[in-house]
Amino acid sequence: MNILVCLKQILDPEVPARDFHIDPAQREAERGAANLVTNIFCENALETALQFRERSGNARITALSYGPATAEETLRKALAMKADGAALVVNDGNPNPHPLTVARVLAAAILQLGQFDLIMLGREAGDWGAGQTGALLAEELGVPCVAFADSIESAGDKLRIRRQTEWGWEIVEAQMPVVVTITNDEHNVPRIPKVRDVMMSYRQPLTKWNVSELGVNAGDAYYEVTELFIPQKETRCEFAAGDTEEERAGAFAKRLAELTSAL
Amino acid sequence: MKDIAIILFASAGFDKAAQGLTGAARRLADQAGAKLRAIVVGAAETVAAEVARIADTVVVADQPEVADYQPELCLNALTQICREIFPAAVLLSNDTYSQEIAPRLAHRLAGSAVGDGIEIRMQGDAVRVVRQVYGGKAQAVLEMKRSPAVVWLRARAFQPAPARAAAGEITRAALDLKPDPRTRIVERKREETGEARLEDARVIVAGGRGVGSREAFAAELQPFAEILGAQMAASRAACDAGWAPATWQVGQTGKKVAPDLYVAIGISGASQHMAGISEAKNVAAINTDAEAPIFKHCRFGIVGDYRKILPLVRQKLAAVAK
Image (cartoon, rainbow over all chains, first blue to last red; front, side, top):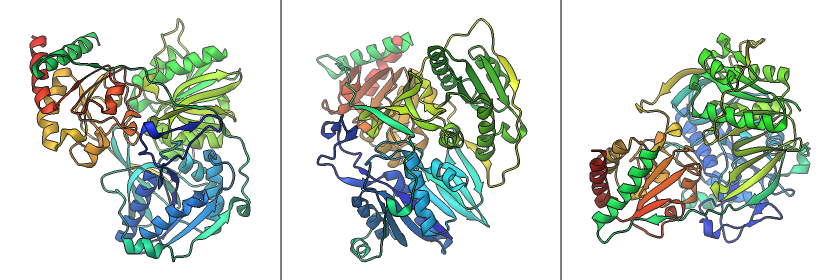
């Protein structure tokens, strides 16, 4: 069985708000001193794929990324986590392509890489968080899509996919090929690669293309960012006052009671 | 002006999200001088009747193939209905099913999708949507470049619309559906919280890393939540530690809630968490660290150890209740 996991490298979302700056003219976040990391849901997807391979035994996992040249780091880490192969489509154009372009580029790369039974992506990225790439990729490939999954099992010639809903969860039976977007769960926390595997990952082959080599029609308009800004919050906290803890707790309780009785 | 459409899944009922979605769409339609056309998927006459009080027309897709949500069949049905209506915009809520199919629906209609909108407006003929990016640290305005604009909204955060004098006409969708065996939902499990959905809760008591243990959630936070008539929630740190179930998780990687009051206990207020509560009307916090970012988002707060404060607060609240 052939599994493809798509991974995106993003600006570290853990950067505290005070160190986060934007370039309003470019309508982009500034890199600043922030690290570049693999989007967490993409790592959850890779972890889910690795666990599937460990259970089923005969799966091959290819990691694919579309991004700047630095996204090679994301793929080296995927190899260190024990993906079987990796490919990078280098984006030398618009640094923030819209999700339809991303889906088209990924679809074109997938055609080059071969046939896949299961294509996995994170449910959204921690930077722009559009939450569309998986669904649009499924449409570009003409295959079904199951969203918000947290585990996948083999069931004969089908897959049993467990996915989260706002009420609880559902089991989806899916024929292959299928696109699945992955969300986080206590069972798919990404593993930490061994130091030796990290070193070895740099010796492994990694396929690289430029977008132009793939012949993608990525030029269509989809949406345009007309403005990017940091919202100014005006909230001013009223701290509970009092000389003793009991008085302060009393003041806090009074405010809670006022507010809840007003609801 | 072409019409504005909304998609409602009847299984959720005409809940706060459906009301907010309908309200947002009604105002957008009025602004654009367009009709509001509702599409109800699934069998629930009450939902169709409720939405007909606000929409100009309602089309119901209650055929057995789509009455229980199945991704491929529902997508196919909605594509057919939207091709008939030919709307300028299709609005959905931010539930699992809507998010799963909205980008695909946009693709099939040669439109553009955008999600998690907190504001939507017309700019001339174009639809503009405001949404949070970078985990809530920034906001972006996006202009949709293809039509229809398929937009899912943080629907609970929008005001409902008043009923109109004349109810809209309700019709049944004419659909040509072929079986699609490629995917099938074979099991549906509702976690029994015994309560309404967290997304619909009016008061929420949430615990974070500072709560310290699973036992403390049960022994300290639960009784406090009961006094306030609140539902329980947790930060990602508390869920990852196994102190609270994953279904309680609020934040960028969890649920987006919009309560009237959100009481954060032992939650520092990292932007990933705040991204889930940006629509809360009032935030209150208990934290040992007066410099914790959570206080920057609070209407009121108290600095101290919740283990000492909560029993006192519970006492006072119980006294007030009497």
